[in-house]
Amino acid sequence: MLRSVIHDAVDDRPMTDLDGLFRDQGGVATTGQLLAYLTRSRLDIEIREGGLIKVWPGVYSRDEPDIPARLRGLDLRAGEPVAICLGTAAAAYGFDTEDTSDIPLSIRGGTSYATPTG
Image (tube, rainbow, N blue to C red; front, side, top):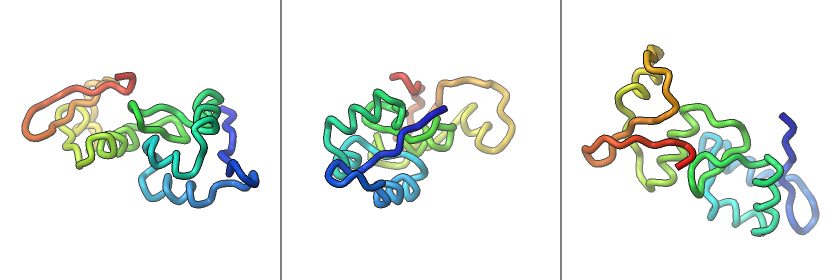
């Protein structure tokens, strides 16, 4: 997969601080965080050209997100840690039996299902 490098809108330097943001957050960042580094038009271009991949509404990754990255994205989206349960918990501990793309999660005691397209 070809991927563009995100550059500073002013002098076209690679965004090393943005690299640190993605690294520190496990490969994900919110739209608001990205807009601290990029103009809205540059953000739209990166999304359209595949430099950023939508993980959840308002959450993006530079690479195709795996389950841990999708879960970190949910934490960012929810504004708090999200507990994994059911098949996602099993997969996290190495014995996935369901092979599903939905992520069962528990927020404040209830179980919900999240899909990356939702």
